[in-house]
Amino acid sequence: MSIETDVASLGAIAKVIRNRDLNQTFTEVARTLQEKVPYIDWVGIYLNQGNATELVAASDQANQLEWEANAELRIPIEDPAQQQELGKIVVKSREPLCFDVTDVSTLKILADELSQRLSLH
Image (cartoon, rainbow, N blue to C red; front, top):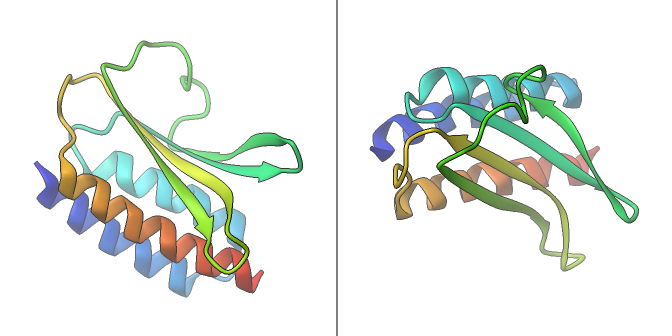
């Protein structure tokens, strides 16, 4: 099932690199993953703001908590230089057991690109 995630993540990484507006980039990344990967039903990007974590973009803001996910991944967005977590990408699915190890590695690459972009901001 991970080919769809790979293709969607490549498109999302291109948006991270090309887009100058960081908030728009987050929104496009969330929407791209949700629209292009059939087993991803919701994507949220959260950033740490002091002691709180804030949802900065979602594929569907209105329905973010109205259903129970059967599968969920939380991929940290980390700053390796500061050795701290900047936020996370959360992907949810109604399908059980739909994510595999390559989904995790592909989304980690996307999180690394977001981390680099955040460090430039």
